Amino acid sequence: RTLLSGRTDMTATTVPTLALPGGGVMPAIGYGTWLSKPGEVYAGTKKAIELGYRHIDEAWVYKNEAEVGKAIKEVIAEGTVAARADLWITSKLWQCHHRTELVREGCLDSMTQLGVECLDLYLMHFPVAFVPGCDEAVSADQMDDVPIEDTWRAMEKLVDEGLVRHIGVSNFEIAELKRVQAVASKPIACNQFETHPYYQRRELFEYCQSHGIAVTAHSSMGGGANAMRKFHKSPPLTDDPVIGEIAAKHGTSPHVVLLAWGLRRPMAIIPKSVTPKRIQANKDEVLALQLDEDDLAKIAGLDKPGLDGCYCHPRTPWLGRSEFTGDTKHYYG
Image 1 (tube, rainbow, N blue to C red):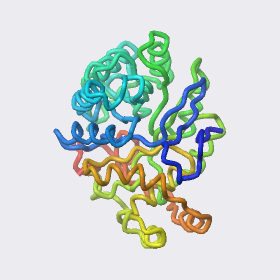
Image 2: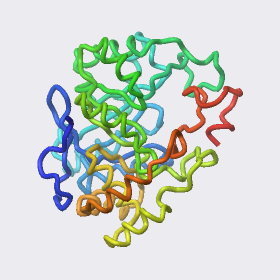
Image 3: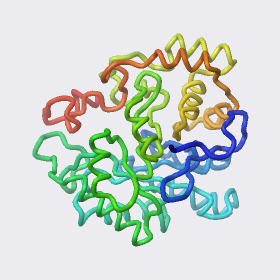
Image 4: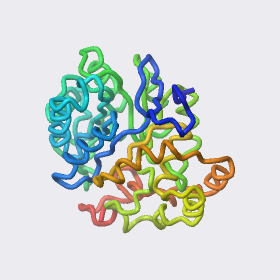
C-alpha cells in the first residue's frame, strides 16, 4: 500500500509525503496551477514556495509553464530554496504528443518552459490521443489511434535518458491501468484523477493503493467554478451542508475540510489559489485539522453515483461522454 510517511497526525507542521514504487517520496501537498489567469500563476507559485510548498503540479496544456519556470528560477536565486533538488515538479504529456516519436518532444517542451533539466514526475495526462498539433479535439477525425501502451514505452525511455525521475498517468480507469501494467518495465508511480466526497472513486482508489500506485487528487474542492460548470449535475461541493457542519464544528472553512479529507485517505492534494491567505490555509490549516471518525462517516455518505458528482469533463466527447459537434459549447462552456 502507498502510505503517508513520517507523522500522519494532521497536527504535524511538516508536509507528509507519499512513498512511490521504486523508491523516492512525493510531498503530499502541492500547488496546483490549472486555470490560473495569465500573470497570476507566477506570483502564486512564488508565494506558495515562500510559504513552504515544495511540490508544483503543472502540465503542457495549462499554457503557463513559463510563468512557473520564472518563479522557480527566482526563488532559487533569492535563496527561498537552496536548489532545484528541493522542489518536486510534475508535468503532463498532452494528447497531441502521444505518438512515440513526439513523446520526447512534448516532455522537452515542458522542461524548457519550466527551465529545468529533469522532471520529478511526468504523467500521461489522459488515456486518449489527438492528432499532432491539435490541442482540443472537437471532431472524431482529430482523434488519433495511438495505443497507450506505445506511449507508455516511449515515456519509459525518458527515465532511461535521465529526463524524468518517475512516470505515471492521469485520469486513468482500472482497465487502462491494467493495460499499462501488462507492458510496463517501470512501475506506474502515480495516478492523478478527480476525487472528492461527491466523487470518491473508491474502487479506483483501492486498486491504486493495492498496486502501490500513489494517488494525487485533482478538483479536491469540487471545481464548482471551473469552465464546465454549466454541465455539473451537482451544486458546488463547498456549499454542501454536511461539509459546512463539519467546518463549523472545527472552526474552519469547507475548503480546508475537503482538502484534509483527501490528505487523510491518504493521497496527495494540489489545491489552486492565487490569494496568499488561501494558499497558506490550504497547507497550514489543512495540516492542523484532525477529522474524527464521525466526520469521516458523514463524508463517506456523500458519494454520488456515476458522473453525478463529477465536476471535471462530465460531458467531454473525447472521453466518450457525449457526441462530437465541431465545437466545445456543449461540454466546456
